[in-house]
Image 1: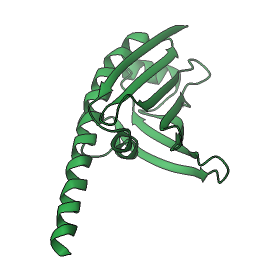
Image 2: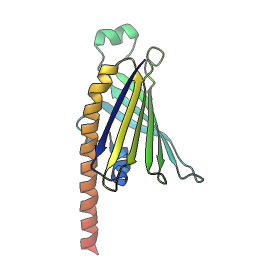
Image 3: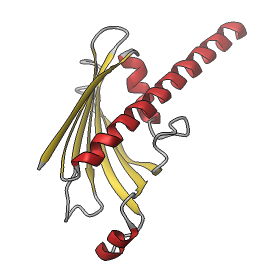
Image 4: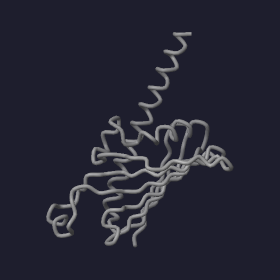
Length: 169
């Protein structure tokens, strides 16, 4: 089993990153066109801890060769279950993802953690355990670039809305 690890810092506050995380797979992210749909079958806010637990089902278009899909009896879509934990007290977002498609043949487990390093910077740390190590490495770069574009657009949208509200007051 191979392990992939990737870390970087976003020049955005933890509040901006944790908010934009919910829009990671939206039209603003032109690097994640393989994502077809994101559904949220479960969300729970723990009254005792304040931790928001969310399950998302992510449907993707597979990039596997057609001959391999035919041989494995699969189709062109795959599903990933992402479970996230947002802890506003410790300012930490933890996302754990695992593939549901072909899980009996290859299990891919990914963990992503966002936590602030300062008021204006947020650390991104990603680890994956799986057999297709090289593909995860390539996708990690695209994923980070795409998500950074989403955060920037979120900042702009919030800024424009704040300006609009000030003008209305």
